[in-house]
Length: 488
Image 1 (cartoon, rainbow, N blue to C red):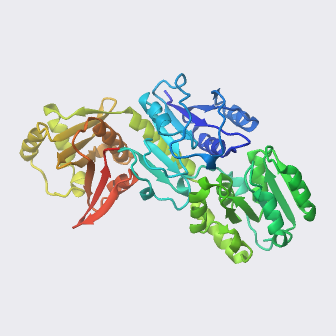
Image 2: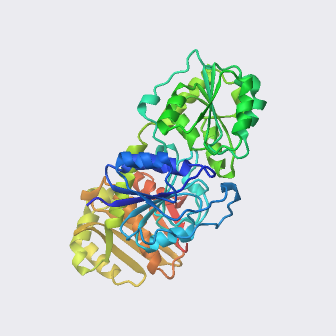
Image 3: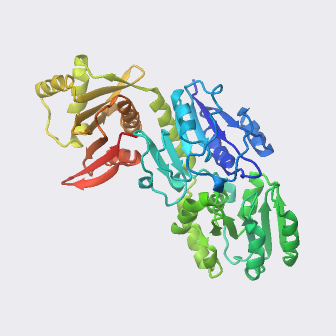
């Protein structure tokens, strides 16, 4: 049976539709492999049409009156509104600043697996997966996440899906062909008209100027008056996503707010300049500039075709068109994680634990790489499963044992030892096993404040697992030490 994924996002002319558009991009990557539902407090025409084309049901909840994002304070959130929708076996994906810790906890309490799309990097996230697609953001910026929270960042997990037909583009010989200008659908502070006024000499150099605004843009008359100075300019409203991509494909240069739309343009390719128009854009703005896939406005006027070509090459490298494959793999791992269960290691598991421990591949990445005699393993194992200071678990998928996980508790630290059964290697189960095991241990743990794991530098698979789960790394003699707080 296909597992259900519930996508939850809201949008409006006032707060914009960026969260919805990101969720639709992710939904398009996943809907053929999972049974999907979209939950929202509104049903704008573009959302209804897109969902209908994919045969994805839209479930509406009570309309919410959102304040503007910049008025939100840490801890502000909406009441939980999916009590009657969720049964407990779904993967739930949230995208929105007001789905706070209480809202997330209500989802987790029902037994669901939780994915959170993030921009703000606030401490204390409890989701199973956090996704932040801002270029340049790294896992180490996330603090005090839940023990088993895994973090995916950067353009490799971009929540935009520019069709290939719009990505083959060249600006050679026509840098000042068409300019795209868009400061967000609502643009309450009217950056659009301000730019037209302040940057008139630069904008006038273009053969065509396309200005995209939303239907709720409150300054439309002022904008119409402003473009009188630009006979080549055209105001575009109520465009479909396909129409937006078509405009991007023809635009050699774009001046955009540091938003999802900027990521979409970077995925299409072109000379991009971004402006931070809201506080929630600060990480995306910084990442686009630092990764050299966009310029600050002050540097745009000096950009030539060589700078444009270098930027487009970097854009093609970062937006490689493989995000969909990565997300399918990630959600397959989440499905495995939801199905994974643990039992306490017992005497009857002696033989299988010996088979795993004695395997040549397992030994190659162990600190003690010498062969292990059965009697030695038996003496150690039977003693270990009786120790009060040891939590020794075997992991199962269905009826099959797929690995083991052990926490040895001493002086407030839980030392991690885990392995994946050799026949299960290559399925991404290391992260799955440790993530779920950390959450399991945190629920029964009463003494340890930190979890610690030691890894040989050449064991790149384990290095990636610990880093993905937000562990802090320090180097000790011939080994890496990874540590994470448990008392979340």
